[in-house]
Image (cartoon, rainbow, N blue to C red):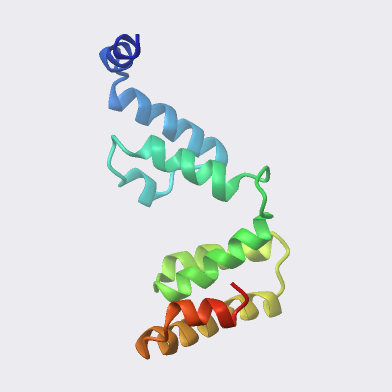
Length: 136
C-alpha cells in the first residue's frame, strides 16, 4: 500500500512553473511584490523556501513573537555576518515594536555568546566538567 501511495505521489507532478507562479502570487500578496532574491531562488525550491519562511518567520501563530524572532535574526545575521539580514531584520524588529536598546542588547548577547564560545572551544574545556559545573 505504501508503495502505491509513493508511486501516486510521484506520478502526478505539478510543473515547477505552475508551482512557482502560485508561490510568487502568494509572496506578492504578502509583500505587494516579489523580492528579487526570491525571484532568483531556484524554481524547484522556492515553494519549500517560501513555506518555511512564511510559517516560521512571518507567522504570528508561533511560540515566539515577531519581535523576538526579529531580534534573534539580527543577532544571528550579525554573527554570520549578513548585512542583508541585519538590515531587513532590524526594520522588522522596529516594526514589531523593538526599541533601539533591545536591538543593541540582542547584538551584544550574540557577541557575548561568540566571545565565550571562542574561549571555551579554543581552550578545549572538558565538556562533561562544563555540564557538571553549569548544573547539568
